Amino acid sequence: MQRLLILLASLIVVHSSFSAQPNVVIIFADDLGYGDLSCYGSPTIHTPNLDRMADEGLRFTDFYSAAEVCTPSRAALLTGRYPIRSGMCGSRRVLFPNSEGGLPKDEVTIADALKGKGYATMQIGKWHLGIHDGSRPLDQGFEHQYGLPYSNDMDARPGLPKGSTGSPTPPEDGWNVALSRDGEVIEKPTVQTTLTKRYTEEAVKFITEKKDKPFFLYFAHTFPHVPLFASPAFKGKSRGGIFGDSVEELDWSVGQVMNALKKNGIAENTLVFFTSDNGPWLIMGNQGGSAGLLKDGKGSTWEGGMRVPGIAWMPGRIKPGVAHELANAMDLFATSLALGGAKSPDVPVDGVDLSPLLFESKPLPQRPFFYYRGDQLFACRIGEWKAHFRTQTGYGQPKADSHVPPLLFHLGLDPSEKRDVAKDHPDVIAQIEEAVKAHQSNLVPGNPQLQ
Image (cartoon, rainbow, N blue to C red; front, side, top):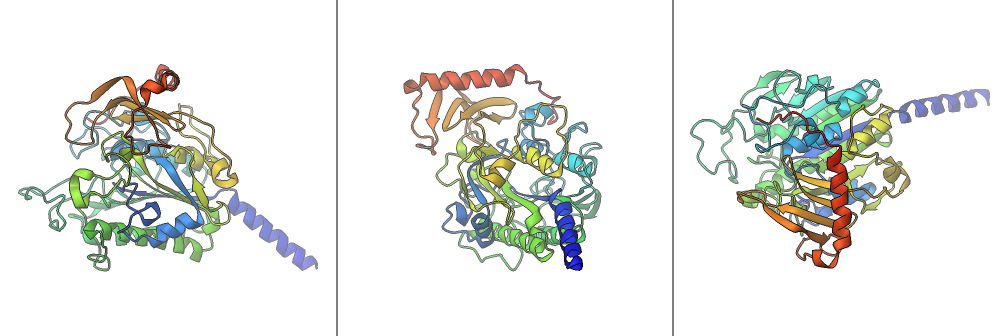
């Protein structure tokens, strides 16, 4: 009997030590739209692993990226702050290989905070937050890195035929982007056809090696950003063409991560969150994905540009269901720090801890969400109401349209933003304008980084 009690006590101690600091895995797709997964309504792309993740976890219907394009949305996710605060936004929209700036060193990332609490940290995949001293992954709290410095369509080779980037059959030697490990180039040009497979192998290896201590894995996929490539096992297999092939391989990758967590006995102590950096790049046609019933796509502050898939999974901790709560990628910062027992930095943080919703099914307090395009505030949502002060398509419209009074849409009744009801609800517009005024009153923009 005494031996049994000792055994039970040791199990309790082990369980407590693991549950005190859960692992965190954030899987970030690139340019994946709201309508590109079967669990979000796609009739042509088969995503059984993400569907299983949604069935076993919490699927959000109203989850947002914090920006309409990739560099600012990535900065916001890792810092929990609107990118205007860090200077990671502007008229140039994203960082390019010749950009002089990057994520400022004094910004606190999820990796910084969790590393300080004893977490192992790794970044896999696309970075796109700077290539200069101070802004690279190993400068921003990550102990290890494996991936590309920016988008896979950058560093195009001279003489690349026009239209190659969005082609269904892009040339495999068309881009000279480098693959690096811990900051050292190991392959240039990168063989993109096997990129998702190799990313996944690195993720599984990291999980297996770090299973006995808390870890944070930021797994930022290159695809389905164009040019699109897929491994031989997936190429030509989807009804959705090469776009569908790349998404189905991404789905396979998610399944491999889930299986690795289960195999190593740590799935119940690992929060996995899957989402996308922005909506689909619609100007790429069949290679651009879908926002479903939402309006517009990448580059815009219409719903299709920033409302994206969001799925949280932690078996035994997160009750399966569907959340209609308004949440966004900045919340993953506050949530990760809360789980790891890390103190929030002494700067304005815009995300909130989702733990009450994830683990106790408690509603989140109502709060405004601000839609920025570059460093300009275009829209604001409170509850079901969204007001547009300025509108502009993602690409192709040279100048924004201003709206006085703002356009107003009820997103519950009209998620496609077709029926402006501003004239019937001046009280709602007044409430939203007050929220914008409060937000801007204490906003200190960071030094612009996207020159």
